[in-house]
Length: 310
Image (cartoon, rainbow, N blue to C red; front, side, top):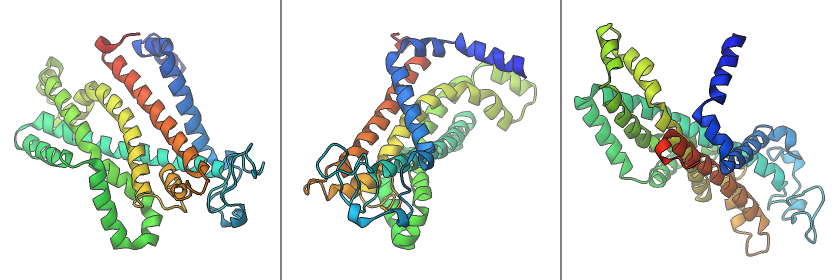
């Protein structure tokens, strides 16, 4: 087992992916920033000075305190507090974790649906292909945000604000994931149409392998490169969609902070001078989306060497 692990690591170090990564300073910096943000979000309960979910640790008298260095600040709250008196550093750490969970969860769901439908449409063809791609075309004619707003509003009206708040994170993963699967499905379908004409697929048919085995064991591994690129970009899109929905009141409630709900909660206080409640979570959101998109651009170039300029 050790020998196999070492050999895999050696092969990775000699690969074009590792070579290009070492030479791309933007990719390295983006990866380091993203890694630090993910680790900070994962270990939020250990790093956060307070628990924003614990009402016993929140004092309304501490509301709207400015960040350290400004007049009226409190050293106990280095990034200030929000309108409810919650420590902004703690809510940003917990909010980043919620946003990342929604982003990765939504992309995982849309990848499963997109890969499944793309494989079926590309390999089986005929009526299966026609039906699945027409469904994808219809869904692509609507913007993701429009679909999410309609579905979110229906669920919120059906279950009420209290029930919706308890299942909001799962609903956002479901809504964003289902709304975005056609893009991955169309990409997988195009790759499958090219792969199924190759000799190894004909050899697998001659050997009597079943259709599911040929699709998932032989064709799918050869179509993963573009999926990785799309999934990386879609994580950023999912995080932005969550923030937009939360800002519109159809996402995470203010009692369960996400980056979007934090921006919304402080929007009404900008004119009163409490700019940090919206600005600081907004900056974190911008940096998070930026580094993910930069990594996606690098990965796109690596997966298509003709575009690589390193």
